[in-house]
Structure formats: structure tokens, C-alpha cells
Image (cartoon, rainbow over all chains, first blue to last red):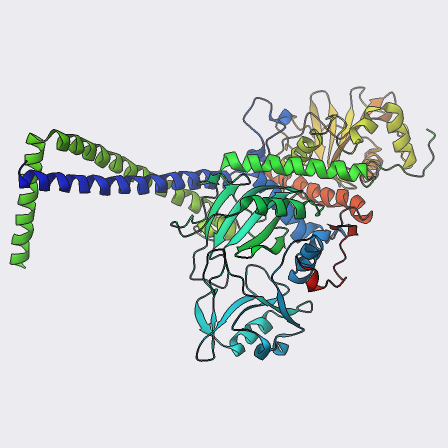
Length: 349
Length: 289
């Protein structure tokens, strides 16, 4: 074979490899876009249309389960309805970080070690804190009141959520700006993700639970609202560890930078145990996997972004929700806390 | 610049020579060449599909945009919604849940069993100071009144005669033609006792452990008489989108009211080993495992 032929063959094989990679990338993108279009198409339909089929008698159609419709209903109730009706769901007691931590501890689940607690941002004893810690307010969602801080050689700090330098004064001011009557401030140990470097913020492991039964798990990176320049990335799994692709397709799946739960069996066991103690058909429990084991993060009763899933998984998760609600109602009825109530009025016609 | 162009032309010429050599002499290269051609076609097809999907995505984002007051709905905003209340979605969801019970007709709370029994139903009705029939109120023999009640609130009344019905809201105002399956007839006379029937039905629904119940009254001689309470109706009105959402808000309220029963009994409290969790009880961090 001539040198020219060998060179041509090498060129062709190089072209082949580049094309194979391009086709694979484009295929993934097309699959994701297809899933996005399917999800968005569902979003254009009303809840009634999404519930009912196109059968000849829609009034007799029992409809199909939908996680997103159920989750949005609970969120609507939580935000607009329950308070008006005098209903305060006890899960709300677990949403602030400190009671949430206490509840996890009482249920035998590890939380990050607390380094100090203060009534207001000015009272934080910075000098008593180590070179790495996380300063938090007990209230606030989406990481707005969470500051993972690492001391710099010049005495300043790096905010590890944003990667930007910051100062005591800036952090204190940011905390004051969202200060409320119920705010308490505390510092926690800086957790190190399993296999991670000190100072790396560990990935969030978010477990969607249905009254004791974890069903769907997300590993998220960059999911903090203060880090506006960072795109949140997510990988999704079933509780048995099967990875789901293009299921929550509106979120960025990352480019291989988001890990997977390294001990999903423990995550699922602990999440199931905690979820069973909450009398509500759905909630999300967040954890961190660290070199020292699983650490509880927080309870989220109604995520600000209830996942919009592809149709198949929206229905499957909707069925998990309905199964959970049924089990909860059965427990409540068995305890005599739910049922038709008779009055004291006369019982003669 | 001319040198650069000459270099590029030279490279292109050498590449074409190599390609010719490979296509004419090397069988393995031929196979690779065929595969390369296939992949180029596949890539072109995928590019076309991608372009089509991007166009469709943009169209839908434009369609959704006005719902948040924007021209285009950003992808990141799609999930950030509380959704829309829906009568059909809410009621059918609760029905599907209760039908998972060991006895689907009874439901988990046993409400279906209570109202499947005429004697128990009458005892329930009378116990809430609601009579089983109205004072004399003459009307067509086939007249029925269906009250759609949401734990103390009436959202829809349907006075039906023959195959038509007069659709009214909880304040007895005509809604017009809101239910495709049952044509509206605004000339159907309203029973004199309709206000009482609505109020009684609302009172009864307040004591049923479901967000929604149909209370059905029928003409019985010169009275309207209670026919049944139906917590698991096979037939559910499919209304206009506007009315479905209006009743959906009432369903949402009914759902919250339904949960107040276990809530007030303390049954919704969070659990810890040995009892319920008290958020005010201090926990020693040393207890952490």
C-alpha cells in the first residue's frame, strides 16, 4: 500500500470518528429537543384537557394521573388556599432549616455539625469560625441565604456558590437584606463531597418522596439562585438507580460534570424513613453525600419549580403520588381522623 | 493572502487525490467511505430535524409567553408556575385515589359505603337538621336538581327536565350553555325551594370527607325529595374552560377543608420515634448520629 493510500485511509478514519461523535451529539440534542417540545406542548393544554382523553364520552372519563398537576395543586394550596381556610400543614414546621435539622436528628439522620448560632447577622462571631464554614439563615429558599465561605490568604473570603471574593461586611449586609422576624443565623461545617476537594460545594441529591416511598432522584449542581451566572445542571434517576434521560428535559443535563449518587441504596433508605414521618403525600428531601456519609439538607414541601416531566414519567410519578395519597388517607381513616361526620340533630323524618 | 489561498488550494488538491486513491484501490477504505457517506446523510437529517424542533419550540414558547406577560416563555420559567385550578382534574384525581381502596366504591374513608345505604344516608341528613324533602314545590315529574357542592360551598346547580337543564351558579344566577353534554334551557322554571335545597346541600357537603359531592334531589309528587349523595359519580360535567377553572378554585377550597378534619385531630403532625415532632423542643446537637 502506498504512502498516499495509507494517508488517505487515516484521513478517512479520522473523518469517520469526527462524524460519529457529531452524529451522537446531534442525536442527543434532537432527543432533548423532542422531549422539550413534548413537555411544552403539554403546557399549552389546560388541566382539563390534560386529564381527559379524546374518547366519545369525556364526562365518563376518569382521566389519568399527572405528577405536575398534583404538585402544582399542592403548591397552589400551600401558597393561596390553606391559610385562608385555617389549615397550616405541619410540614411547614420542617421547612425552616433549624427545626428541619432537629427533626432529622430526632429521626436518627445525620446533619452537618453546627458551629454556632446567632440572633442577627451582626452577632455572628466570625473570629471563632474556622477557615471553611457555611453561614446560613434559618429561612430562605434556593440558596439565597446560604454562604459557603473559604478564607483567603489576604484575610478576605471566597463565596463558593458564586466563586467570587467577598467580605464579612458584604455577607452581613446580604443577610440583613432578607432578615425577618423568624430569622436565626447559624454556621455549619463545610461539607466535602465524596471524593471532592476541600472547598468544593457537594452536589445536592434531591429525592422526590411519596409518603415513605422515594421514587425519583435528582443530582443537581449549580442550583443556587445567588449564582446567577451558573447554569443549574441535573441528572435524574429512579429510586433503583436507573438513569433517566431527557425526562426533565427543560433543565440542562450537564456535560458529564454532574455525578451520580454513589450510595443510592442509603439515600433511598434514609429518604424513605424520613418521608414516612411526614403526613403529606409528597415532599422533596435534600441530602449531601459526603466522605463521612449521607447528610440531611432540608425538606421542601412545594418546590418553586415543580418538575415538568415527559408524559410517560409524569404519569408514572403521578401514579406514585396517587398511591401515596391513598395510603395516607387509609392511615388517617384507620386512626379515626377522616370520615363522614354525623351531626347531633334530630334523626326523625 | 494569495500565498494562503495557494496553500489551501494545494491542500484541497492533495486531499482529493487521496480520496480518489482510496475509492479506487482500497476495499477497507471503500467501506469506511460508505460509512462516512451514511453518517453525513444522517447528520444532515439530524440537522434538519433539529432546525424543525427549534422552530416548533420557539412557536410554543411564543404561544405560552402571554401567560406570563411576555412575548416568549423562557424555558427556565415554564416550571415556575402554580398551574391553573381545574374541577375535572381535581375531582377525577380524588376519585382515582379513593378507587385504589380495597373496596373502590367505598373509598379509603368509607364515605361511599355510608351513602350507598339509604338508611344511613337518611340518618346522616337528618342529623344535620336537613329534611329529606322540601315543602310543597310542584314541578314536572321528571325534574331533578343536582347540586355540585364543595365542602360547604355550592358551585353549580343543574335543574334538569327532559334532556335539558338550566345551569346556575351558587348564587342561582344563570350560567347559560356551559355543558356541552347537557344543553341549557333558560325557560325551565326554577323550583321555589331551590335556595333551600342549595343551602341544605352545602351544609351536608361540609360533613363529607371529600372535597366534592353531588347532592341529587328529584321530584317526588309535589315535593323535591333527596335522592342521593354521590361521592364517586361516574359522570362528571365537562364544562367550558372558564367554568372548569371557576369550579376548580372551589375544589381547591374543598380539598383544604377536607384536610382540616385530620389536621384538627392532630393526625397530620410530623412524627418522630415515640410521638410527634415539636419544633420548639430543643435538640442537643450531640444527639446527631
